[in-house]
Length: 424
Image 1 (cartoon, helix red, strand yellow):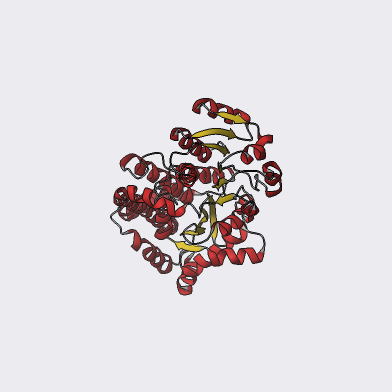
Image 2 (tube, rainbow, N blue to C red):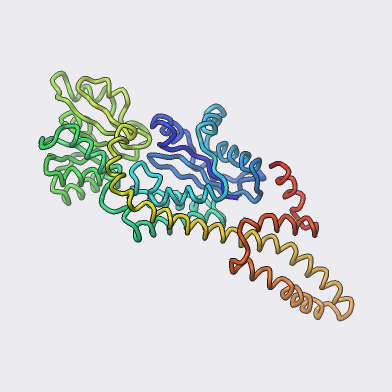
C-alpha cells in the first residue's frame, strides 16, 4: 500500500512550509526501523511542498495512520513539531497517493501550473532515496512512473509550454511593481535553475541593468557572459542589493543570506526604494528586512495572485494532462495488483509443491518426485498467473482474493491480513 503525508502551498503558508523544510532530516528519514509498517520511504522537498512517500506490506486505514506517524517520526525528531506536521499534513492512501505524485510530476499541483522545474525536483527526490538505499520495488516503480508521466505531459501537451516558472514570475513581479517602461538596476542572487530563469527574464525585458551573484563565481561569471551583464563576488552581496531597485533571491542556502543589519549598513540613510522577491525555500531573506524604510519584501505566497493569468493561458492543456495522469496511474495500480497477486500465489505454490513432492516421492523416489511435482504445480498455477499478468483480473479484486487464499489454505501471513482487515 502506497502512503503519502505532506503539506503544500495550497494548504499552509510559506512560514509553515519553511519550518518543516528546516526541521526535516532527510538522512534520518531513510534509516531502517523495526516497524511493521513502512518498508520503503522517500521524501520530496520543493519550495512549495514537503511530502513523504512510503510503502507498507499491509493494507487498511489503521495501517495507513500508523505508517504516516512512523514516517513523520523518522522525518522530525521533536515530538511537538512532529505532532504539528501530522496535524497540518494531508494523508493520502493507495490510488489517491499515486495520482497525487503523478499530478505533482506533471506540474498540475505546482504554484505555477506547468512549472518546468518540477521534473528536476522529482528526479532529485528519487536520486536521494536511491543513494540512501531506502527504495524497494514499489517506490522505485512509482517514481519511475512519475518521471515518465511528467515527460509525457511535457511532450504531448502545452501545459509546460513557454518559459514561465517561479523564477521568471518573480522577475516579472519586480518589473510590474516598479512600473512599465522604467529602467532599473536589478540583482539576482543565486544562479541555479530558478535564479537563471529570473535572470533571463530580466535580461530579455531590456529594462534591467543586471548584476548576478552566486557563491560559485564560475557559475555567475558564465551566466553573465551568456546574458551580456555583469557579475559580482559573493562578498559584495549586501552592497549590490543596497544599490538595486529590484532583487530576486533564489539560493539553496539553509539560512538567510540577506540580513537586516548588514543591508541597513550597506544602504545608509539616503538609500532609494527596493523591491526584493525571495523565492527560496527555506527563505533566503531575513523577514525583518521588510521593516527597513523603502524596502518592499515579497515571498512565494505574495506572488501567487499574479500567477492567475499564466494559469488561464495553460488551463486549455489541463484535460490532456489529466488524461495522461489517469492512464499512467492506472498502469501503476495494475502493475501493483500483479505484484500482489503473484506474492499471494507464491505461498500457495510452495504449499502445493510440498504436498505434490511428498506424495510423488512416496511412489517414485525423491528426484523424480521433485521434478514431477514442479511440473504439476506449474500447470495448476499457469492460468491464474496468466490471468493476473495479462490484466484480465480487476486490480481492485486482487486484495480480497489474496486474503481469501491466505485464509482458506492457512498460508503464511493469514493472521496479519485478518488483523489488518478487522482494524478497518
